Length: 387
Image (cartoon, rainbow, N blue to C red; front, top):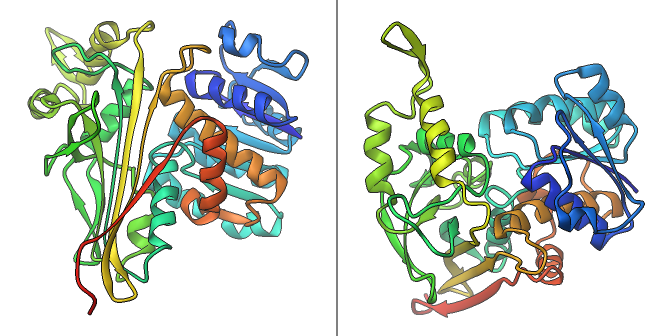
C-alpha cells in the first residue's frame, strides 16, 4: 500500500503518523519546502517513510507523484484540492482531502463520471469539520425514522485560554479567517439558505473543565449536507465553538475591514488588511508549547416509532502529552488517514466523487476512532409522547 500525503504541515504530519502506526503503508510525505520531521514522526516506523520536495503547482511533477501511489491524501490548503483530485482521476489513484470549501467540492463533483470510469474513489471533506462531525451526524440520522433538526458544533480550543481572544492557532489562520468572513449554508424550513458568519450566537455547556462555550455560524462545516437533506429535514446547521467573548472581539474587527482581502492605500502603499492581521496574530496567537483540546457535539432530533427522540454524539479530545500531537492534529489528520486506509482496503467501496458523510460507514469509522483513543460518547433521550 503506497500512500502519498500532500502537505507536511501539522495535519499532514499527523496523517502520516497514523498511516505508519495503524497500517502497513509505505508513506511518501510531499511538500514544497520539506522541513525536519517532528519527533513523533521521525521515530515512528523506520524504513517506511520517505520525504520528497514537490511543488503541486508543477502539474507534471504532481501528476507523476500521484500516479506512483495507490492513494493520495491532501492536507494542502483547500484551493489546491480540485487540481489534485483531477490529477488523481487521470492517474488512476484514489484520493481524499480535508476539504472545507463548498465551491471547490462542487467543482470536484464534476469529476465524478470520469472517476467512476477510472475505478477511482474520490472522498472529499474528510477532516474534522467538515468530515468527522458530518459522519457522526449521519450515524445519528440513520438511527431515527424522521428528522426534524440536526445541529453540529465543533471547536479547537486552548486548554488554558489567554485573553483577549481566548484562542490559539491550531491550524491555518488564513483558513479560520475565511470561515469568519464567508456566509454559511444551512437548512431552514427544509430549504438551503445562507446566513452571515459569526451570527446567531448561542451558548453550549460541556462537562467541566471545558464548561460554557459560545457557538456561531461559520462556513464549510456542513459540507454538502444542506443539498442532500433539502426537503427532508426542517433544520440543519453547523456552528463553531469558542470560549465566551470571542465573537465580541472578532465581529467588530471584521466590520472595520481588518479581515478584508481588498487592498487599501496606506500612505501611498497598497496593503491587504488581512495580511497585516495575520502577520500580527500569528505572533500573538501561536503558542507551540500550549496544549489544546477539541470539543464536538452533534444533536439530532426526530421520531422513532412515533416518539420524539433526541440523540447526541459528544467528544472532548486533548493534546497527546506522550507524543506531542495536538488534539486538532489527531481529530483532523487521523481522520484523513483513516479515509485513505478505508479506500484502499474496500471498506469505502464507492467510485466517483463523494463527501465523507456519504461514503464512510459510520459504525466502522467510530470503532476506528476508538482504536486511536478518540472516544465518542452517545446519549439518547425521549423528548415527546408517542403520536
